[in-house]
Image (cartoon, rainbow, N blue to C red; front, side):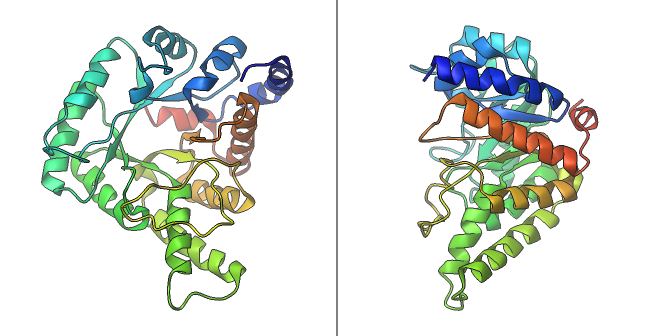
Length: 301
């Protein structure tokens, strides 16, 4: 993936991203971009890594994780809890934390399956928070119903004194499917998008700014009718963020304030320069809505 052309693009962007480094916008790292990221060292608010990638074949070596942590604030997405087996089985994320012992983690995000028993989930969260030594960020598991389960997750966060990782793109993908599959769906595509956006904003505005500790966002294919999302995979982050996605992020930031925001791209990966350009656009948007980076990072202290 690395090339002279790619290097030139990234170096040409570094001046502009450096000017925006105060904004708390980071990159959700995929392993194929690791070498370019370390060699070119762009300005980022933080780097997010999947714990399942650490030490995995073709993943992120532990030594590289330590180097990442020495250069940028490090956020980690743990393995999902509650998908199979006993709900109290937390060995995998605890093992992941042990592997990262000694690293200062800015944030730890824990994906959950909200259909599981709330009391058991709360116990799991408490165990992991105790091991991590800090409140964790709760996020939806892969097969969650985003519109419905975000509110369940908020209740669990209040109970455990944790916070949320909000994913507006997943909410939007779910809302689009709900509107288009409704018997009363408007014929106009524009009206469908308006109704879907309203559903998402209802969910976002129901959350207090103090409840959300991080946003993760990416672009997905909006032209095709989404497959049913309940109990299946979430929004496919394989595109640049669309104008509707940027507009939704703007409205979320205007409500929530300076929330650290990770730009994610999960499949059909482009070169690193494309993701860094998305980071630049997100940083500019955060600056436009008045979200000051230094103030935002203080939320995690």
